[in-house]
Length: 75
Image 1: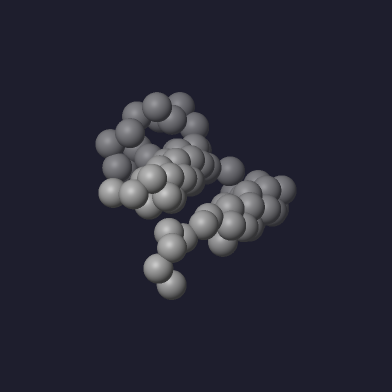
Image 2: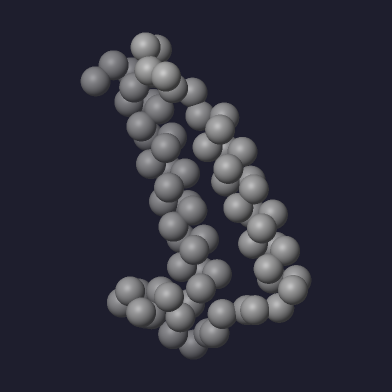
């Protein structure tokens, strides 16, 4: 794999891992359902403030995804 392809894959993988941890942290009941018991002492925050915080964070993830450079020759 060429370096640029490796860098792009590594960046995408890092973004995905960060996003997945965010999902588990923001939805502890889902994390528990999946077998991740790090958040068993918490419930999902369903407040309006939490909703807006999640939306802002998801928009940042989308911006990061859009900014990732694709390897040369890939659309």
